[in-house]
Image (cartoon, rainbow, N blue to C red; front, side):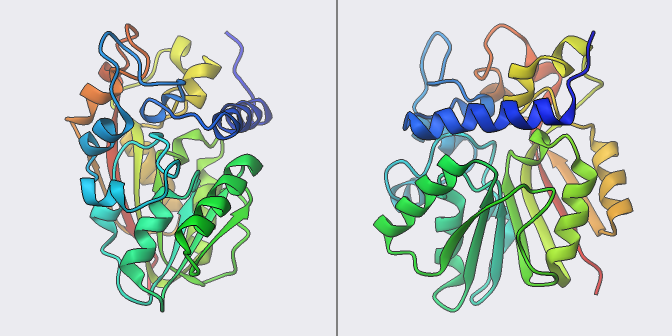
Amino acid sequence: METKNSDQIRQAVRSRYGEIAKQKGSGCGCSTQSSCCGSAPVSIETMSQAFGYTKEQLDSVPEGANMGLGCGNPQAIASLKEGETVLDLGSGGGFDCFLAAKSVGKSGRIIGVDMTADMVSKARQNAEKLGADNVEFRLGEIEHLPVSDASVDVIISNCVINLSPDKMNVFREALRVLKPGGRLAVLDVVALQTLPLEIKNDIALISGCVGGTAEIEVIKTLLTEAGFEDIKIQPKAESRDSIREWFPGKNLEEYVASATIEAKRPL
């Protein structure tokens, strides 16, 4: 079976998420379906709460910022502090950026990076609605971050790194932009076992946050080789019920789960 190359993957991901942004649509978790599917459709709010967001958090952002494309709540593990600079990898409509902005306060700063121009445009419009002066959005790839060296305290991300065909460079770039002692606190989908080729090579499943997932030990090795320490990866077994709804009937929950991924740049 033909293996998709990096350019094909990036183009597929950019195209799928660009369409969602233009259509003002939403996803079913990371699956990028036009709506949450299955026999009993699930609302974005219900799915977001299942992934760890509170109703207060959901109500605090502009309509359209939460597009239902995540697989967890990075705020729950980031331990953000007043005045910190936070970088969101794959910021989408800005949902996690706006929540982070509340935690770091006016003295803090949030930078969202997304590879899709329509998402960046949507996020900037949402920032204007919210009056979020300490949040900015930049167009760029997470493998080549438009961010200065050692300028960020915390990196968050929500179900995005799995989409990259070059995860090693994502982690190298993350280490580069973090300050010494800075931390990585992301949610992503990980492989619980080796994926069958029919999953790994299905472009819809790759852009749906499944086909490009890496196994936990592989992620640990990549983070270590990039230079991170204190690496912790914790799968969330309860996430598999939500993942089942992304592509009904494919039994993907047997192969992948959402996980928290934490690591630090050495001092």
